[in-house]
Length: 295
Image 1 (cartoon, helix red, strand yellow):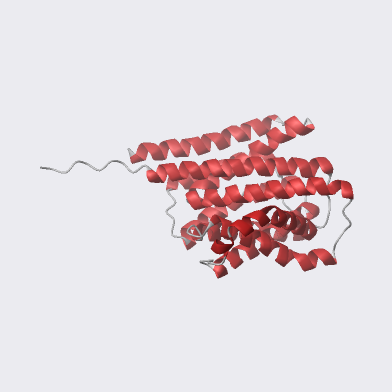
Image 2 (cartoon, one colour; image 1 turned 135 degrees about the vertical axis):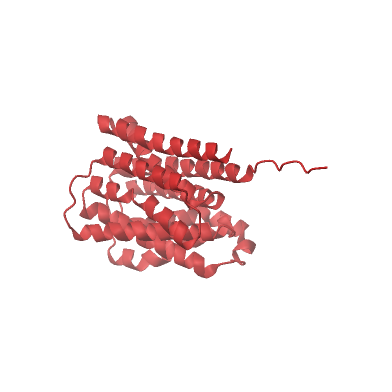
């Protein structure tokens, strides 16, 4: 009696779908956070913004720390967590600093190379298998992103090195998150928030600018949205491979364009729609072709 053929595995597909859903939730929260920042013109030194974000986030997760104090006493990978937070602190601060040194459109254009760096590092450091189709899809999506931002010529500027630091350290933080897939999400959130506050506290105090009382409620909501977004982002990269999620990062352009239109009456140029179409075609085309190959 011959054995019945094994049913096709669905666990990997389900995990990938859950990872994408968590990533989309993160994008939504971060987009609303960006709207609040833009609407209230919160302009402070980059390191101060990162510190305030971490400090307010720490206040919001204090109840979580109390409820899960037993789990926090059993951190499985303290050094990996510390390295991840250090990479995040450098990436966040560099990103805010780059906005002050370079045109916004240029920073955004360069930032879209981060998923490609992440995908490459995932293959190199984690041994994740990246198919040719995924590379092709990521390349096409990157082309769509360039159509949207139209960065133009890039003359050398010290700010370019700052952007490079943001991209590389951001990608390294993503890779470390994937390596910590067996770590508790609560532990990782606490490590992230406390670590950011500790690493940026002294430099922020040295450059501190007074915060008007009217700005604190907005900063509190920004901190809450950032913390919730961080939770969704962690869940995304724990559920799915970094190489699977990386191309979907380009959809943040669509989120930003939509928010700009509805909240600030910013009418996107035709190239925005062309670029978004290219991105969606690349993402969906890659998934469809990979699904056909697995049949």
